[in-house]
Length: 398
Image 1 (cartoon, rainbow, N blue to C red):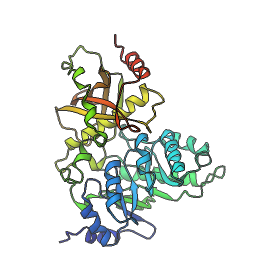
Image 2: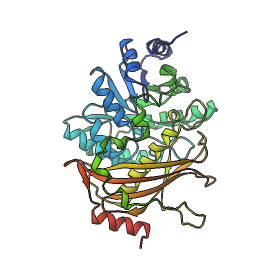
Image 3: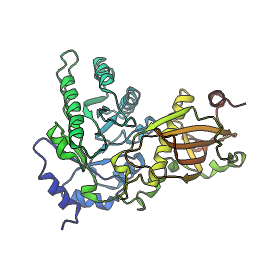
Image 4: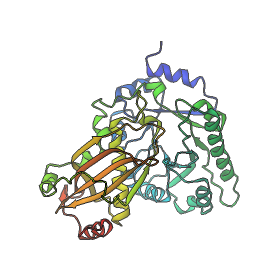
């Protein structure tokens, strides 16, 4: 019986043909397990949380190739830009532009993969096939010289149907070849196809995969409570917390529970459920909900408050309360709804929930108090008047 990660990796490597590389997905696993895999010869590791990846980079051998495989927020690119080897899931030109900017700042060229949405779930991220082809016609490699656009990444529908999974991987492979053969804007670095995880990587290999992302087959179930990772699971933004952030919290009181007659939030963000979000009981782990809320919060402010200087400002959670109402299953189509319900001097209160898009059932509700934090002077800061006006107008506040 194999218990050591390096033994499991060697077993998987025996199933990989020449030209296919293994990304060992180490998300929410302690550095000690990664070290064991490293000692056995594995060099490529995949992470999907910025703070966790930075922490592991600082403590583990420097010849590790760190691949970022999760949904990446633009305001966090700067933290991984100095060392990341490959960013797998670039799902918008906005994100690509920020990666190029941060790569230029670090005097690097960062390899990236464009994420294409071929799955049936509406909550998956990525360019649609038509959007992808149009985007590549615009010659993005010429526009963004500090990134190396190396290929495609996709995720298949979460299903037991191997035929459906195979058809989606094949669609991605054909898109990859169509772009590669485009004589108008050839991309010399266009070589990688990242699809296939623990349960479907053998199918992926049959349909052109050059990178397979495997975690649970190597490291087992993720340890969300391990001290190396538990804080990240709750919220990456807590890393910025300082004692003076609490100064204005008292001015924001908890709102009453939502009534059936209350108008729905305007900001609704579809959420992609990834394979690694699901625990051994077959539903989304409760700690992952906070990642959904964090993603929705960032998208809210990118939508409502334009031209935010994320180099200087962070939004910090100082108080959070969540009510878990019903379980989220991998097959659910979900979205996060976000609205600001109170404004203080330095703080504001968010009312968020996660709903089933098909039934409108509320799965979880979260109330959080947040403040703005000045990353330059290391102190909390008042809400800019432009933010106040934008939020009041968007939320129809009196």
